[in-house]
Image (cartoon, rainbow, N blue to C red; front, side, top):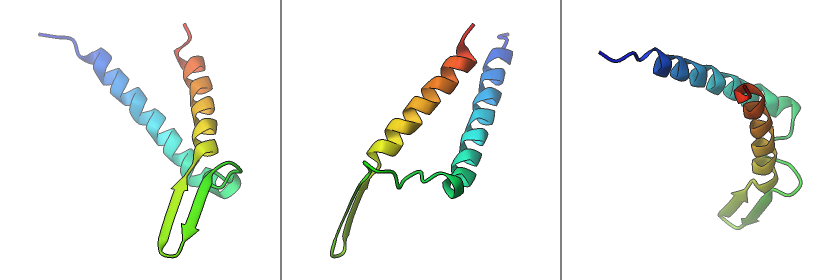
Amino acid sequence: MHDISGIAKLFLGLGVLFFVIGGFLLLGGKFFPLGRLPGDIYVRKGNFTFYFPVMTGILLSIVLSIILNLLLRR
């Protein structure tokens, strides 16, 4: 029989992390202009709309990298 407590802890940790990120995105949109930053590409022509969040993606990548480095540092 295999010990799966390590995998269970990993899933619980990921669940908490997703919960925190989801709450930040839900509430953070009211305080921080995520998705509407300078550098995000937004093109609207007639009935065609193209949106590519370049700066939002870069900013989220930097923030998540810092958080994961702090959490996973041993």
